Length: 478
Image (cartoon, rainbow, N blue to C red; front, top):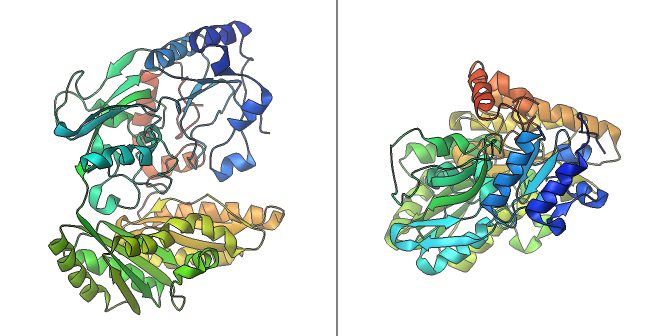
């Protein structure tokens, strides 16, 4: 267990104060509890778990505010945490202190369907929100692969996106306002204290300053979100390609033709193999280097027209094409893409999938060479690796698979991760498109942003002069 506490232990009086705020049953100090809060879904925390000194479970904004005021008064670091599905160490301690668990603040407070918006607490799970919106014919469009588990507060913290970002954008496009507890413990509401408007240019856009800040500038306790109607019809086209480069070229050609699919997902030959191993009845085509899954949505006539045009564009590059607009068949075709994150681990007997270098994004024009170079990097280090992701906006997820008792592989996969991040920057891209920076990508921030990092650090110092909120993340002060 990695030691993270480079400061004096918490005074027992602070624990007592926390018990006054939250009640004894929601203040956790046992070693077994602290071990639980030492991890998120990242490879980094598997290797180096980071224990806090205490975890508290919040149920209200007032509790969060009182806790932050206490932490600020005594210079105690505090780490906001939702479902901990993040893959960057963003919700774990770096130097002891308090983890504040927001996952129980999970109420849907107001579905204002007439005004196309909803007010929720940050611990609402994304899929639960959309299930509640279905009877109104509405949805919250961002849909990360962890939608069955991740909280919307976590999505806001990392500005998450997902499968349909290519058409519908990312989380920040749907946040109209939020209630935020600042590092002082003060509470503000962005987007207008009482506003129900769907747009505004009144004042500084403080909501967008908070979105993607990974809990370093404030703790979100309430969200006002914009909604969209559910699409009437969806159609799915599955295509396979003999060469990775052909798949990349097909994506370029689709956009050049003026088409706007709602999603374009890629799976390389290793991912196809893994999915067929996990679920043979899907029977994905195997004589290929890549599969693309296109989705189009809208009115029935619009979908029919888009599909015909899309098929005409991709048939120049594809060796196999399959289409369906039947809901059950569409779900079956999508199932392959949804399974791939878990299936990749089957590529190596006794191996496990490493979440590292897993979220790069490159310009669409450089997709073909990036796809090939990732495999060249994997081959250089002798690592089995699958590539999948939201190729429609250049977002690639790599899935290296290693054996944990093979020291050489464990060392090589770390080098491979570094090379993949370096490749993203070389290709004029970014080291993270939707998973965030946290601990694991902090070392690339200065290279990626240059002098702009000085401005980010200045903002952090201004809002959080005592550096209590999620310190050590995003290359901000530790």
